[in-house]
Amino acid sequence: MITGKMKVTDVVKAYPEAVELFNDFHIDYCCGGKDELEKALQQLGIESKSFIEVLNKKIVNQPHKSNKGHVLAVERLAEMDIPVLIDYIIDTHHSKERVLLAEIDELINKVLLVHYEHHQSQLVPLHRLFSDLRKELQEHFAKEEKLIFPFMKNSFTESKSTGFVKELEDEHEGAGNLMKEITACTNDFTPPEDGCASYRMVFQKLEELVKDVYIHIFTENSLLFPKYEGGIGQ
Ligand SMILES: [Fe+2]
Ligand SMILES: [Fe+2]
Image 1 (cartoon, rainbow, N blue to C red):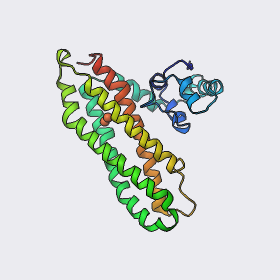
Image 2: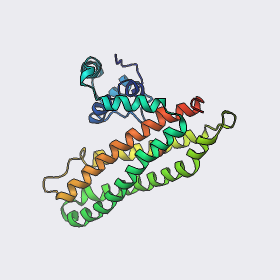
Image 3: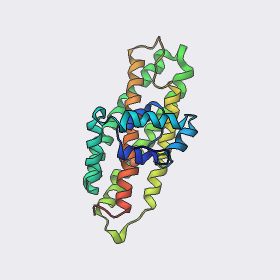
């Protein structure tokens, strides 16, 4: 049973299929996931009692309708040792997001040029936000892959350092804020009526990227880092 006092991140750990509803209502389960669900809902102006009722009805009380793939994935990730989980994060999320960043980068330049005249008020800020996100994510992935993840894989309990966990969490928060701005700037990834196929493709790929990064950050903040700090899986 889901209650308002549960942390958002704990709701996702216990009921991963809540992610879809959380995405629809912009409930932050990665960077802001440490907040209680009730507080997160209040901040968004959502009436918490009825929302939690719907959540329980849809997810907890109808498990046969739940997305089993999600459930199994989170259970499987939670059981992985740190080196295996790190390899999974790189192979699954870093690789996919690098491809999406490159594809969007090329497409968004094309769309900016073609639709500048009528849609500059949306496309110019979107181009800037995406460029900032791309730069931050690429640098963040390099830091994780070349510096922090090798250290996490090889360190023993005595030589643990938690300073860089905070550093990565802060960077996740920065990326999370940019993604919220991108979501608002694209009207929830809804292209304009006169948007061409490339315009629609940019929005579709941006949405795919944002959803993947949310799950990626959740996996690091809520599964990998607590496992590392707790010394489990060493
Ligand atoms: Fe990562
Ligand atoms: Fe990260």
